[in-house]
Image (tube, rainbow, N blue to C red; front, side, top):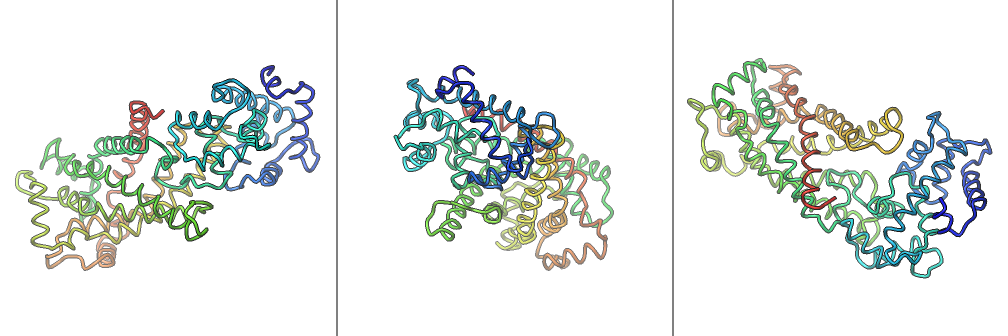
Length: 470
């Protein structure tokens, strides 16, 4: 701590007095310990919005004995660790080692972390920390701004903390990876996401094919007979029928979703504040923007999805499968353009409910993991587990809509017994097959969740390293 004291020009006694004063600032009840409500109230007084859950995270980080409250010794231990951590990163940014960070040095550090901001944002960033308005950030100013930030002090985390405190949106609640909108390597992130998505879809393609086959069966659906039928008609490759189209969908769907999401956020922000600064977007705003982005992306690639389903459910002699061009032309000629969008409505209806359930459950599972599993911010594998559970829950809730969509996609629209629409599918399925009919194929669908999420995560992280995104 000697270097920290030197940088702050404090004696050890002065530092102890400062930390004791900060503890007393939170300890309004003068009880000698801090509880969640006191920490939350103190952070609110410091203009840190409660929705960012820093109070809960700060409590978990400081509470070393996990008794639900923080005494002074625990608080002091956190301060020691945090100030040393902040000193080390301050020194890494202060290239000239003159005891202050200039705007140019901060710019270089952000750029090295892959974050590109304009001059106005940089000026606001410096201004937010620069209390004496001399154009540079001293270690004391740096420390005061970040001292109560409970997460690891990396330049990327610090930037996101500034965004949040200054109410600049970072797209927190969305399927788009956080932080990409201001990242100089945005295209590389999309490439990494596309490769990860393609890999996971290929690895789980047999389960996807089995799910679709079971969904369209109007008689009693059994897994083993369905597997035998797939093997009989196509051997090993039969389980991967339609996967080529599934993989081709990944990149355009991600790109369209990302672009639309950012555009919708800008429109909402402009409607709220009169200027397109994307400020103060609520969770509902982000959920709406994500839902619209998902709907636009789904609509754009939907014909590919329909052709994939037709390909997966096609029954031919000796397992022969038509070419994609032949199958697509046949749909166009005999059923018309509208046939490529059969089942689009139930598909779109499931987007926002799925996203809402997924996000709410993910936050709940993550909070539970902090309480019962880890003290600090959950690591990547715990986040993966939370995402897997929340995704499975969301998928289960909207699964009947998937069944309806698949049945509408698979059936030719120009036949006598064709479904007349979404409600007709619901009615006929429920009357003839009961509630179980709307959950056909859910078992292989659930089996997909864990390997799909795991493979996506592992490949995505590997691609980030290979593309120099770490």
